[in-house]
Amino acid sequence: MALSCFACFGGGNKQQRREEEERVSLEARAKAAEAAQRRQEEFEKSAAGRAAKAQLQAMTKQSANQNKGEPVLKWQMG
Image (cartoon, rainbow, N blue to C red; front, side):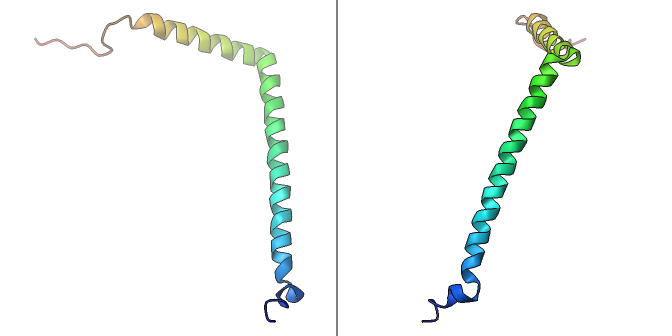
């Protein structure tokens, strides 16, 4: 009998409140992800975004050509 009255004293509301908070949290995360995606797309279209992309490509190309089988650190015994 004690368990059947548990919901009468607000025990059932905790589960309902927890589910509502989880739903709201999931919605907030989804909205934040959408906003981040829009910001990323806007950045990629902007001059700064295109410049950053070009710089990354240049750095990648340079690092690929820079180390053609040679050790990164060289030392001599003298």
